[in-house]
Image 1 (cartoon, rainbow, N blue to C red):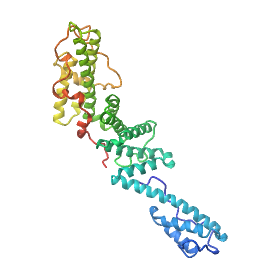
Image 2 (cartoon, helix red, strand yellow):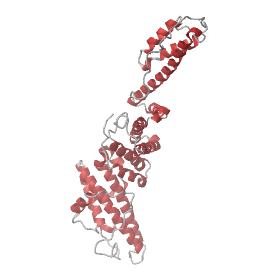
Image 3 (cartoon, one colour):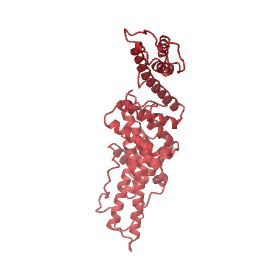
Length: 393
């Protein structure tokens, strides 16, 4: 990963500056070379080695700086050697840090990888190079997410934090230093990076923090572009959330009706039922897209069964016209979960339901087929069908 400091020029001597003579030497220092001329030759030879192997050059240069500090005749030469040794010391440090970054990632030594990754990202020189910083942040975030998916809850909060930071960087107009959006297992495009980062956040909230209300809007954003635009499981997860809302509202509706002496739907109850139908409508939209994109026959059947039950809620038990309704619905943009739906009043009526409580499907929670567990299902149950982003490790 040659993206940091580059090697310095090998030449250390300025034209006209040569070794004039050697003054008395400090015999208390461990001898590396016998005299200044031999030391300079050794220093020059060591500089020809690869960057990470120039530790000996640094050692010899520092030896010269101390050993011949009082050599007035060669003062300028000694000063230049000392300056070059200091620069090379930094080159070696960075080279070894890069090597550690690469090796710990490939060896999946995550604690060490995260430590060196943060060290590099916090380096002032790295922070000046925004595209490089973004690529490092994307790879760091991806590794965190992979561990969270594998069940390591230690990195839950960091996954959310780093994902949001990366999204902010991209939103501010920062691009990739390599145009691949990442160092290892890159996202390969801006859209794909945005798609997966939003999914990282949504998944972590929904699965690990059990906070669907916060997580679902991020999953929705993930489906707007990139890989997740064609991920049926992501759309289904949104559908499960909407179905849960509809089921809860139906339960509240029934409770309100049962609380009246004549089992009459009050205005409050009618409002609950109207909202239940509205959320069922949103769920139909989500599951309609999930079914269209699904490639697994079992999932296709499951989503189809769920759509039937949701359609009954939406249209007071009606089953005719489902396919066309879904087809027409998904031909339009999907509603943003951040916007609350308006209560649905059935056509031909002046309220959301008849005054008396009915016993049809529209007033009962979803009970059959896949929808029976829809409200409780999370992305953990469909993760295996979710494709990994482009650019495998």
